[in-house]
Image 1 (cartoon, rainbow, N blue to C red):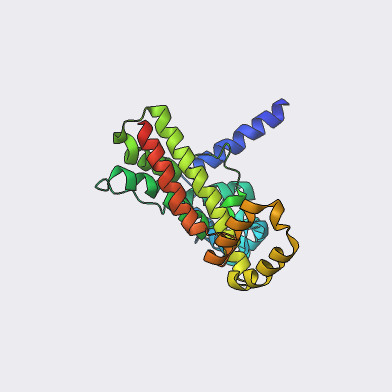
Image 2: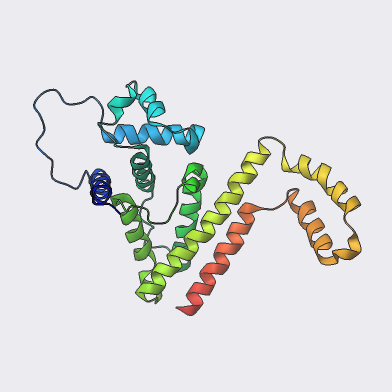
Amino acid sequence: MPADQDRDSIAAATRILELLWRHSLPSKPGARGPKPGLTVDDVVAAGITLADRDGIEKLTIRAVATQLGLRAMSLYTYVPSKDALIVLMVDAVAAADPPIPAGLPARERMIAIAARIRTELIEHPWLLEVSPWRQVLGPARMRRYEHQLAAIEDVGLSDLAMDRAIAVLTDFATGNARLAIAAAGAAAQLSDAQWWEVNGPLLARVMPAGEFPLAGRVGTAVGEHYQAPADPDGAFEYGVATLVDGILADA
């Protein structure tokens, strides 16, 4: 990487980290004059509102500025780029996750780790469009990780196993949340009962029953029971309980 690009990358990373940890860093002396009417927190909150409503693909600096009654260029005095804004948004959403009550049984505490991740994703579906790899860690996400570790510290896992348990629970919750969000979106256009009413008989007519005896039998039972292709909520309850029981059995 050329030296200029390297310096630019370091400067951008430094700026994002300083914004993420802005409430923990010492205040910098500023220029004299009236304080700005908005804060970085206001900009981040507006970004979350827009992404929740319209999706992250429609999130732009201009759209956020309009939401706040500013010119687009003015917003760059608060956040340097859309990418930086998204990093701040991800961390701000995590701040809404309180500690897991220590008085709960260990099994319920572990289930709560996955349940809270799933709820967050369903409430903010745009989070699924943000790459989880090399996410810059801000105070809220670090605090949540601290809370998650505290929730399972007493179950007998090693440090590495605790991290892996949280990762597995998070991955399962993420996959299930994606299915739940897709189901909700499809139901907004056509109810699952209506979908199955049309597709169930059609599938039974075109699919050679002798070629798929198990899939036909089980699939029909599932479709008739759920009146839908699947049951994301029930699958989450069953799956997270099975995962947690397996983790605890190895502790």
